[in-house]
Length: 126
Length: 247
Image (cartoon, rainbow over all chains, first blue to last red; front, side, top):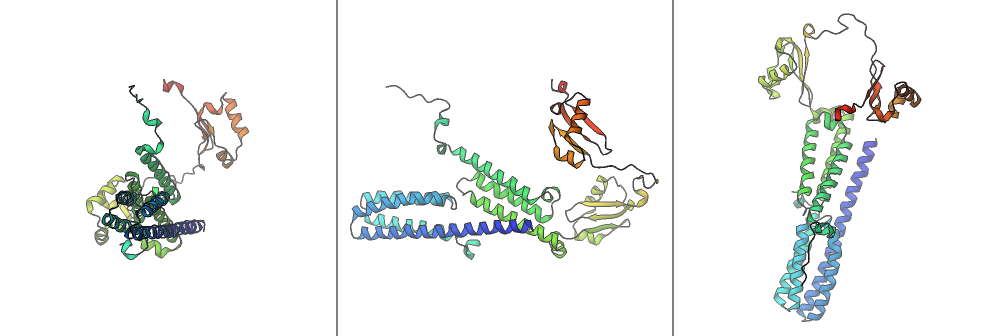
């Protein structure tokens, strides 16, 4: 009986943690993507100053998020987001619209990939 | 301009997260601790007598532990969660095999008699893919040279061969000669490496004052004793440290 109780407690803990981390990844990636979409609109409107201010906010938010993501995500994937964010900041400073938009699209893809990869789906299992 | 001299031990002065090797060290120690705990939880059977499914679990745990240890880009949890999951599966399966004979037969298989009454059962040997050379080797390792000396040879679910020789070929026992033998109890260890084992004293119906009396009779203290205990005949045995061996 002790074995079964121990088994159930540990199983619940693992499932609970998995759901918590999955929700965390989904919510935080959604927030980041929404913010990036805001920057896209600012770039299209030619508001470079505001876009630069927003990217600083996103960057500091990302620095907080990445610490938590490190616990559950491949660190290489986090490195890709770091690189992409650094490139976007540089493009924003020189006001390169095409490069900025391309980099934002890549960044969104990289961010979206992480919670998608962790989801319990058939394609991820196989 | 004065050149800045770096002391040889400068790396110690760096912030701890600037030393990449420390990550591997900490990860290895953490995983090691987890694997030790997991193997401990899985119980003594896991180490002493591996069933096929237990062997698989042991191999997989070894492999899973190695991945996050050598690849620091992988999160530690990606190794720890599967190890825990395997432990859970193993616990559940052992529990089920303990409770249900059907599941036990399905998971562990059942023992196979390969020699019966001194005769080889070829079909069983073939089914188990056990060739004659391997069988003879195992028999020889049990000091049996002739197949006809074997009453039964049973291939157990864990892969070991148990051999029961014919009654005429069995070693002589006191029972064969109708000899009465004295009762032999389990030996108890009271002092090991100078440390007193109070639990064993209680199990053997002795107390600490009895032990101290035994030591006092020999002008000894517990810290001078390497081993002390009761043998299977109930006699008090004592071994003191031989300091001359270390010199």
